[in-house]
Image (cartoon, rainbow, N blue to C red):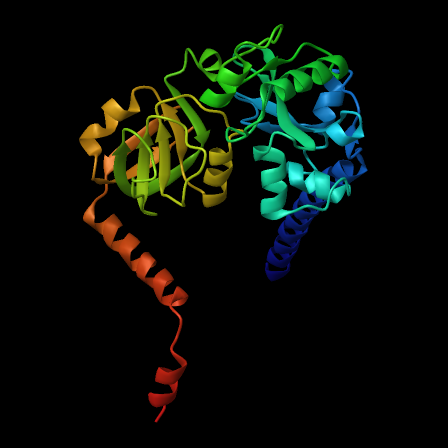
Length: 329
């Protein structure tokens, strides 16, 4: 009997080992394929070319968003690079990783996102599944001038296999592109016109609801707040959740922050009206693919939160060298 049990156990262990080995091999193969793929392409001549470079947000949903980064080097006769986005997550990673430029940090940011006389034009091309349109877009805080929007459009539409429209991501970009002759545009509102809810980052959050009618430098924001905003911000400090009343894109800088912080980030139509009854309350907010839920946090949940917070603060608190000496005597 014992030998039979040992035999069964050995088979289970062997089967588990083979499963883990298979999963590891599949992941390794995927990583190798990413490394073997070209760092970039000079043109995208087919959907297969695009897919070979693309990363897909919300795959297998009606809102799947396959996308590829692009970089245009104005110093090199406006050469375009369609970036292997599986390999390079950010534009700066590609530019530095291929030695196009060794600028980093604030210098790279200011020279290529804020100044008009920039070397690089950097954006993203995506397939907008809800409207079945191809678009190119820039970071919402990018101060790109109209002539460079037009230049990007011309170069992309010469080197991409199908027409690509411009998607403004801020009021400034919308105004800057409004009178560019021949420029095809698609707005985020058009893409989301039939949506009353859009989960940009699926997560659960615990925090105090803070309804902000207008976000400016005078508004104080706490790390433990779930913000309800009337607009999509360009930048935020760490918070517990983000709810906006205007449609946004999973490619936005704010959503990249939300993913990094592990917090919910959603668009909800008429959110400020819907959530004003919760303003100032501590709530549990759960953003799911198909819907969301909100409920007032009970005392047990809050007590556990305060306990975890205290433990974190204790770990972060620097210990006084002097007090450690005196208490040892």
